[in-house]
Image (cartoon, rainbow, N blue to C red; front, side):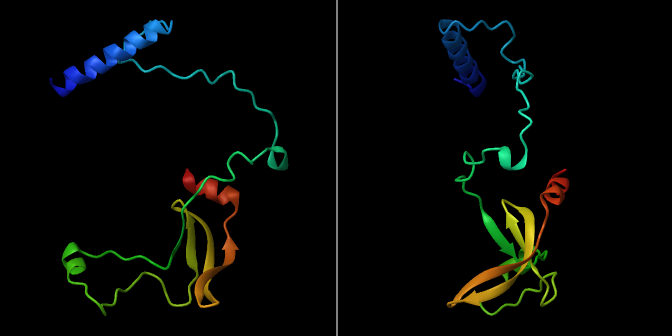
Amino acid sequence: MSDSENDDAVMDEWASAMEEAGVADSKSKNEVRHAGLSNLEDTGKRGEDVNLDVILDIPVTMSMEIGQTKISIRNLLQLNQGSVIELDRLAGEPLDVLVNGTLIAHGEVVVVNEKFGIRLTDVISPIERVRKLQ
């Protein structure tokens, strides 16, 4: 059975299941249907009134970036222990603090109890973060 025949069989099974559930399919199976979000209401709540407890435990990836460089694959394959890679940042410049790849702050490296950390020196405002996403 080809991939397209397999896909059609799966779609037919899905259509059958929808019919059994009483959901009428008036549109073709390849046509896009939009979710009806027009009835969602804006509660008018902003800032502290909004209950953020729902999202507070969602894990995110936080990373610190000391710099970047572009390198050819040929040079990448020639790297070995002791190789030095020049980055695009000057010594003493603040590091970028990223959450899920989005810049949220700048900071400097600190050592506390023999562990590396970062002291935030500048936090990007939420408005600026949203602007950078657009």
